[in-house]
Amino acid sequence: MCSPPRSLYELRTCLEQSFPPSDERYGYFNLPKVVYPADPDFSSARRTDYGNAQPAVVVMAETADDVRNAVTCAAEAGYRISPRGRGHSYQTLSNSNGYVVIDCSLLCKPEEFVFSHEEGDWILEGQKYIGTVYSGSGCTNAVMLAATAKEFAPEEGALFATGTCPSVGITGYLLGGGSGDVTPSTGWGSDDVLELRAVIWNGTNAEYITANKEENADFFWASLGGGGGLGVITDIKTAIVQSPEPLPHEDRRKFLFPLLYFRYFGEEWKRAGLELLRRFLYENPKESHKFGGGGFLHSEFFVLDGIYLGSAEEFIESFGKNYLLQDFPPSTGYHTIYQKLTSEADTLEDVCDGTGPCQDWPNFHGAIIEFESYGEAMLYKLCYQVAVRDDIEMRGTQTSGDWCKDLKISSDNCVSGKYGQKVPICGKREVLDALLEAAYDPESFFNHGGYPEWWLEAGGKPPAKDADNLPTSLGGLLIPDVDVDTLVKLSNVGTGINHFQHGAPMQFSSDYNAVAHRDTAIMIEFKRGEEQRNKLLEIISEHYDDGELGFQGYYNYMNPVGNPNWRKFYFVDKYERLSETKLKYDQYNFFGNVQQVEPAIPKKKKTAEKGDFDRVDSVYMRGVQG
Image (cartoon, rainbow, N blue to C red):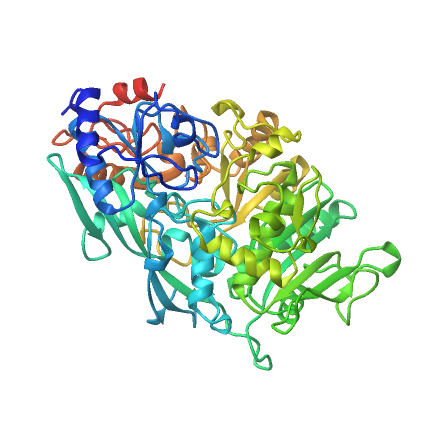
């Protein structure tokens, strides 16, 4: 059962017949429909956010028929296929060496989205979804956020569970699990998917399939959290979950962007604070699910920031009774900033400016920014994140360096940044309105990531050239409910928290889909080198009876190629079922790469130890990828 020998002649002949040469250009980088390594546009065509590989060819697919034709040409010529959404794979696996890359970004057409306003129960008590959306697979977080904000009225509280980088493609995000700021309320991104459409290779020809819980249910189950590799996803139907109801005396839903510091004054404070955080995340889902985001564990404090689904009053009440708000004497200089943007205002208004105590609240160290729509809260956070805070590592968008010019708004909406660029004043309504339009346009600068050329020329950090230097090449971990001693040790080393997964993700059954880890509330990423990584791994390994073999990984924060335990790390006991599904839908591994599930060999009794399965063509795979 070997894959057919490769023929570049057959590949080119088939592609030229399916996509006759023309002068038309496509997408943000103005590319021809088919681009080969010898073509002058190849450097742009193979470009991804994290380094460049050397594919055999790049096909810009506009329709599902384009996808089917490209799959047919690749498979018949013996080439492996790499679907690419937005090229955000940390290991550039959407752009693999020697593969036929099918770029799906042009499948994102917001004007063709199909929304419904049907309702039904969701996972948490009293929770419901209030609609669905069928969208193209090449869309980004920003497009889905903007499209949902345009379709539903702000007071409806519609939540599309996106990630936190605007230009990340939703398909890879969902196939690997998908975590973002409202994950604690909606579930993993994979949990929100209701149906998929895809193109597969059945061994003879390319075939369209629809997959849901009734039709091609095994494909559906394996795709959501299993990392993909069964075919090319062309369309996705996703649930729109409703934000929690406002307090009884409040007339509408509110949404916050909070920033909270909890400072330690000695070891007892550290232990107490971290234990309070642990209990809040793991033992109080009724309240904690309203908060999601990330933060940082430091030897002298922890930080929380993200999105809170409720008003400032509700946040203060909830975090206060869980003892997560410290009440500092005014003499310490620690104060609370509280701003809000109402529907009548043109810019954020100061309620408390941080120069003294705020209302009758505890005098905690932090800030609360309040909005009347989820879309505005998220756009403000994204604006702050990619335009203001991240100017030291600006890879989230393709801004020209002048945000006001990019957003087509007047220059008085921007101020000077670190590198002389013009960054937006994120709290102005004109900026937020312009960001909404940029987010909705799949071909805008806001929906394309990577390192802008102007920024590199101005002295910014250069892009990674190989996997060893990638920002997240060391991977990351999902942290289960460890004891406070372990949290103290983690804090002493120091680590960022990329996302929280408490609340709803823990309520879905373990077999709901292929997401393997349902007991982890904290996701960390190794960004500070091998020494930090090794210290953190040593601490966490003490939690598991089987040491490092118990580690829990997040597929979208992949470890370097070569991790010998990757099957258990990402998929635990689901790997065998995933492998059998792979055999059924992609027996020749046309859609596989070095860290995707491989097809089991059929009709052969497995005698290896659990978790170690026979694979098809693994030697060939290593040769292509290496």
